Length: 435
Image (cartoon, rainbow, N blue to C red; front, side, top):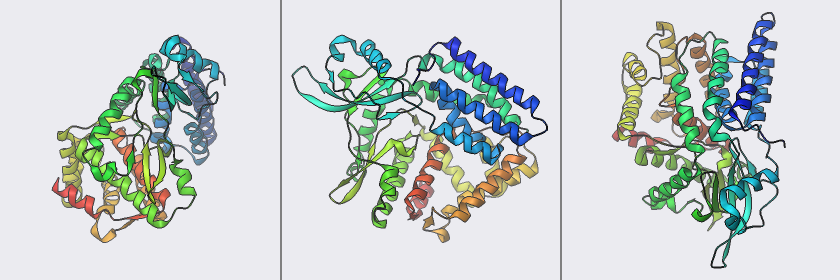
């Protein structure tokens, strides 16, 4: 594939043209609104897929926030944005490795695959064999970051702010998106620092060691720091089946149930115990291996890590308890304090928000245990209530502090649905009450 533009000027120009085309479609499409939204969406997917980097990464996230405002035909196009990454050519990857590693280390990277084994918005992964100075060698993977990605974050997001303002206006929204973009920018900056990801990986390994029950069933690749830089991450080549492929192979219900238990317990440990959460629950970030007749989970990505302070976590659990046991006014005011609901919303919007939250919290009622994550009626009701709130809301923007935590939780629920399991949440309910 042709390499994405590197300079801030060329990237900004592409995004500026996109903003103008989106606005132009808005002016021309007053008669046929559905057709307008579909064309705007097509333009968005086309340009962000070409640019990769922060533009694509942020675009993928923003589309999840905007999907309720668009017609079904537009959402079908948006779905393509999640898979819009095509690997760059081998010569470009080799050029980056030569620069980052130098000729000496590059000469000890052998059998580098010419075809990427995975590609994402920020970089792509190639298999290789690493030869150490003592003559030994190991099978590894190299995660190589595309050129110009880190440098383009600020300019990419500046233009995306303008585009998303237009998209928010489709539903008559006036919410302040600036806090959300600050959060996205902070996470993107951290994701483009592969040395930080290397530290995250080792920090996660240390935390995992405090939970022997989880460590027995969770695998983390070994880091090869000698071959790692800010834009190249060298890791042990972990073998396994991609999580979605493992599910499609129809493992036994017992094994799927145990995998669901493992995913839930791992999330509890990350948030409640460690305050160190992997916030990207993309199924592609997990492999499954069979060990001693039991499924084990391999974690592949530590770029999108976020720390939550003890104070934040205590407030979060207090809010959950207030939602279950407090009055509607109490928990609505609690959500306003946490920035999840704008105080300027009117009474009808607050009521719609309360109904949406009450419905989501009904998962934690003892009478509903175990929870059937494949229940289509529950998911339909959730979507209908969320849509009712979004349509009434005029001021509430996606919450800054909970943006990526909510992404993790919704992704976790989706994984449990893919597993086709019923999970008993009682242990987590009791621990949350005692927290």
